[in-house]
Length: 335
Image (tube, rainbow, N blue to C red):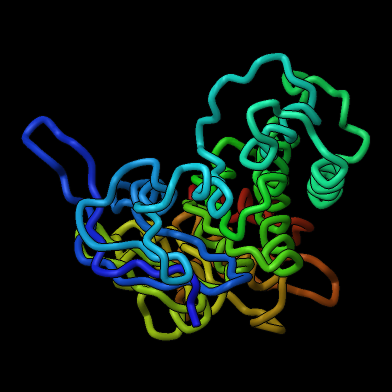
């Protein structure tokens, strides 16, 4: 049975001409231990939905239930024990150490004195261990890299010890290694802690590899829910992300840029599905060549000798890299 339910919920925000509704009549559910990725184009309402679930902004219609209890009707203190939030733009923090900042997650439990018990210390230590921050306790938060700082904010949410964690674009400001690291960390936390973790993200290709479910949002058209593999097979990405400049490759689960192919080249390969053949084809299309059975220039991919042979008007040249092959093809084309 789902423990988080949205029933006929409409979301939006104040605008100059009244309230702007971005999604209407949403009925969605989430179970324990799921990593759920909210994806979709800009303006579809990902952040608005996440902030609405977190009760950081009011819903316009409907109800949100946690184990049958209306989230908007319970006290903020009780709600802070159910939901924790990591926002895209974290507010500037004072000169805290890592441990001090993570300890703030215990505020809903410590009372007005704010003193930490042995149980609080244990939970903080576990949060640091789960986010690979052991040894960082006394580091100043401003001394950390972006990836390390993001792990601190996730650890703070873990220390809050809520069954639901909501993260708005948690990887938007990170480089590729840290984006992947954070997504894998969130997958691990959902599996090992049983917490339900929501992330809004533009990282569709990465989200497909780690999320248990996708909530695919279309502007003013609702939310399609499914496991990533089913959504690939049923063609939903093809329709939602349809664009003349790119298309979704169902075989590889990635977007492919549509290129202008205004030149032709003939090719011969020993193993069409091999890495050499595949990356040679990618390079040719990137340079504007379409593969044709007859063309003035022929390219042979010789995998046994690890070379590329270019032939034009009876003259052949052997090259030993794709870059050299492209240069020689261009030289033949000029002539």
